[in-house]
Image 1 (cartoon, rainbow, N blue to C red):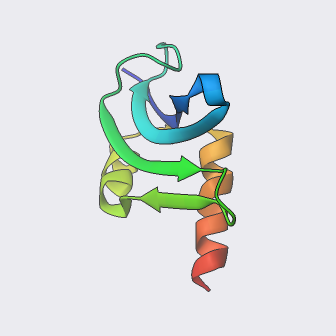
Image 2 (cartoon, rainbow, N blue to C red; image 1 turned 180 degrees about the horizontal axis):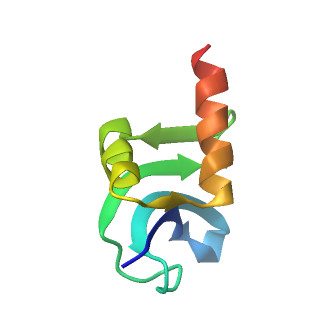
Length: 84
């Protein structure tokens, strides 16, 4: 089973206020399917955008062979830049 680490939409669609979960999910599942594990959160509506990530869980999934989506890769780069 190929696993991807990607964003899953959450929030209130009626108010157009979305936030996202960072999840490990099988590659063949749709965006809003049941995920294997919750790894963090991303809220772009806050200024600056809020990113919370459990690095230990993320690293364990990467060691198991999970691949990051392009969006999650860019969020990781933002986190690294903010940490410096």
